[in-house]
Image (cartoon, rainbow, N blue to C red; front, top):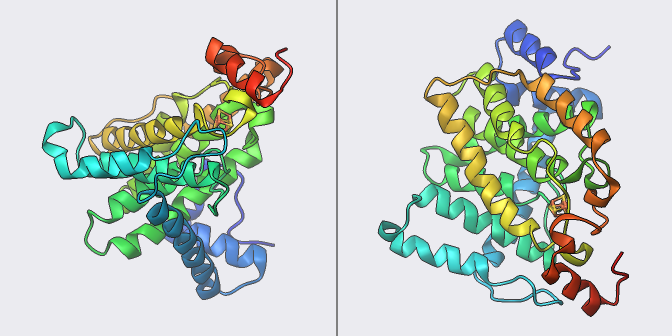
Length: 297
Ligand code: SF4
């Protein structure tokens, strides 16, 4: 029997308390047990994931490459350049860098370059955006970054277990929403938050996305996906800030995830990755469909 097995946040908390461990350590031990690997090999695997994410970020903030349809490309570079002028911005270095990095990953994905689907390709920008940006502002940031990634991964796991990470089943709450919850928890652990605080942050972030449509223009993971990732970073950082200021989520994370599952069941198929509703059916969305030779309805 697995000692570190869990299916929801309550069970993770129990393990954290029983073994006096942070969420990231429970995640590592769970993966080691599940995959019959050593803790060191699980850590190394996560380092490879981190390095692949960094590659996408580094390339993405330098390039002006456009996607095939020309809808996206070059915005990460613009946001990254704004860091030089941070005094004229309302956000700070951490938030701007997070948005630049998230956009970089989204644009690399749209240009068919390599990214890490963490947890999915559509929502792949939020976790590296938030955690990489924060790690650059922390002492021992590299070590903390891995902790943040392990902690974030548990949120993805329990969402997959109790709701869904599929946009075709649950809309964008399952992609950008899930990623924001993951990033909020990971960031909170990196900042020294308790396991309870990590789950409060994830709950606050995820609550803002209940019922969010998946409505990409022409069915391509470009618009509104990439900007949603950038804004997802702001959501995650805001949720973590609220929690570190002493705020709690009134609804526990496990209940928020249940609500997400219910909302997914209630959602029209037109709002679940079919490009038949929401932004995909705006005048601009229809123009893109025509260019792609897709049926309008
Ligand atoms: S709109 Fe749809 S395709 Fe785009 S990020 Fe959200 S879930 Fe993914």
